[in-house]
Image 1: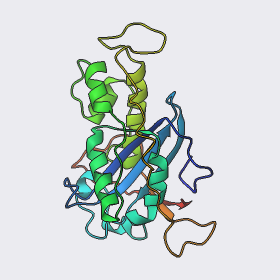
Image 2: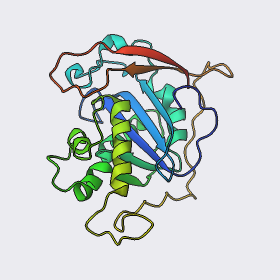
Image 3: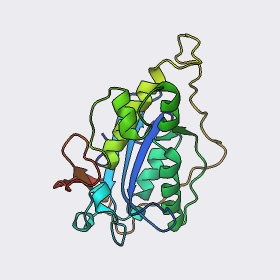
Image 4: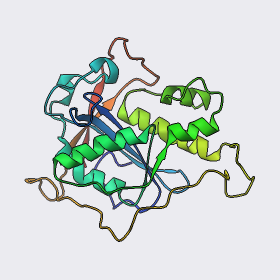
Length: 247
């Protein structure tokens, strides 16, 4: 698992399933307050996970939705602190998320604030996949799709909970029959893994934060919430925060 320092560089290829929680809906005016990445190989097996709260350097925004309080981001890393690791995790992978374009634009804006142009990467949206694979679902939000797929409950509106749910949904949709299936041995006929980006364009890299000692990393703060969905508008549960070591 990648909740502590990366033991080795991630293996190229496969998928990076992402989810961000933010201080509001506008990537230009609001900031990322939590981020999670679940790494899957090309066969959808989990290779590792990364998750942390992020200090947005301002108000945390709608606590009634993401259930993150101002006190909980005290001591959490800034985005610049975790940016080098995020770049390593996203390199040479297909970016996956539920309404992935939303997660991507938040990440793009955060990287832009520190002077990094995030290159175009291939994307897969589990919401779009669900529309063809879960015909008849009551809706196509993440919770509705997970329920329609029979994948069980999860801690909604937590970055790691949503990323894990999207990873499970990707795995389910990749193996589920679709209207254009040809019955071949390689899986659904209308489901194609996007090719990786232009290898001739170098992937950006960032140096580690100034002052970081060799062998040490940025301290991460991970939310530990009770399992099961918690709907917006309900009482905010007491989240246990755990230090995940250095990344």
